[in-house]
Length: 443
Image: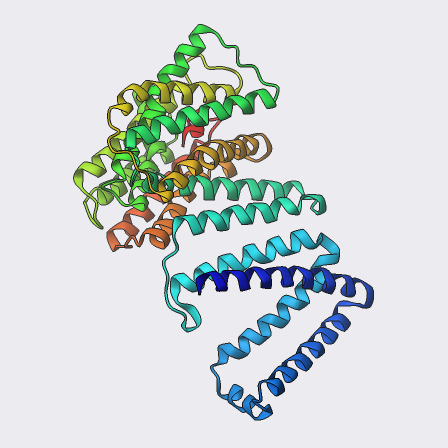
């Protein structure tokens, strides 16, 4: 019966595509209201015919008036869909209309399944389904390219949301990838693959891959610290919920301030106050809860410290001028340094589909798409606005952890999260990034 259901759904999809084309054509010729009225009349006529043929008679309609309210809502939604496609198709084309319609229906359908809305049976949202929704959403967005002329403000907003969502979701990607792929092997192969793709990005942009020996040595050092910190996070998320891990990693700006103080830099008192408050929040979060262990929390803190050291050093050593080239060398160096050890951690390798998709997501979206959007923002948006990702990402990570992994929101987590986010926001606002932060490419 499943095969029959799929076949009928495919036929319905084809019929829906024809409906979009036809309604759009008539809407453009005779008007949206006129086309919608004619379509509704035809549907009513067909419905009455079906009732007669089925020998149900019109008396069967009486039961409709006693059905739950959402049955009426379904009819209203049908009219809205028809009216929308009638209006949209002549303006953005059939492909874009259908793509956006499907993407929206998938998102709403996933929410209905996840929370059991309108009386349907609850079904958890799997990672493959989530990836499918994201990919279809991207396809719908790309189909709009010929019709959209985005203002600069809209482009900045789109890039900022991209950074928020992608970098906030890498914690979920790491957790899912590490379920059936050894952490060190997953991290090393991820950065080798992402580094290779970043090399292609450099070449496509007309960048320069030739660098000095000193710059190469710096990339190797930073590659050990930053991808290494990410590898530590792979291990940590086996014993720590993704939301808690993201909050501890969000303390990186606080550790950076501490390291800068150790280097005898003078910083605003607001930044120092933010550091003090932020570490108080970290202390609140450091108490194991929600399945977390002291070992996992300690690894998260170690990852944050390694990230901070790499961030500070990357600003003080000789690095390639092209941020994309620098990131490519860092990824390749970190991945290749870890690979010889990682190979010996692989036994009976049988990754799940979810882990493979998570790995692909980290390579492509986490390392390439997110970083590209970030670098574009640094060149086209105020630095203070760009820096907001530092305290928005944990919020995204917590929401995704609750939605896709059933993580619990405890009062300790919420209080600690509020303290850390406010503290990081204070520090980042006082000390926004002054140049492209190379370490962000290895998220």
